Length: 231
Image 1 (cartoon, rainbow, N blue to C red):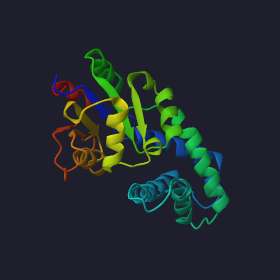
Image 2: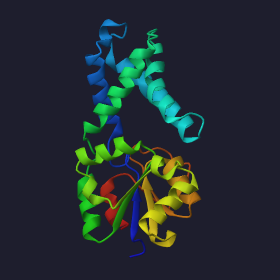
Image 3: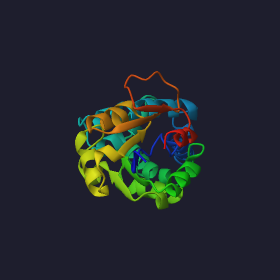
């Protein structure tokens, strides 16, 4: 085998963040009775949350804001779009979101099957994620993914963020892997693919959304089952 160590991203690659986040926010919308507070339609609220979350995650990964600001400001800005300027509510919902989100367990099709296939082929599986330490481990437990991975490398533990080279160096060190026998597998062209390239790793772009690639990965797939053709 050319590769022995496989480094996976979690959110949007294996764990269906969009589906799980939407379900969690729907629960919060009802629990906090936002329909009585000037937000009559959940879909509109989810659209605004998604918009601000994407922008703030980009700022977070580039080092412009800290975790705490990301966590509550995505709620604050989404509520502000409906002229609901309630900072205590924003911070309350931010806490509730991170408490309830990891309990959701929707995965992309064939996730468990491909991980089992790779384990049976004696690959060493690891995760490299920008997600928060406690939250990511809870997600893995709730979705039955934890037993597949030997190392779970988070931005908090490594004190770095994808696409920075340092988080990948830390992952290699923790796993005892060499670059030449390792490959990074993820959905985010900047964080996962360019990040892997920055660290000298081969890469697999998991293009679930079939977007036009702007970073050249070593391989591109559109369904997790296609990993069987590569590994």
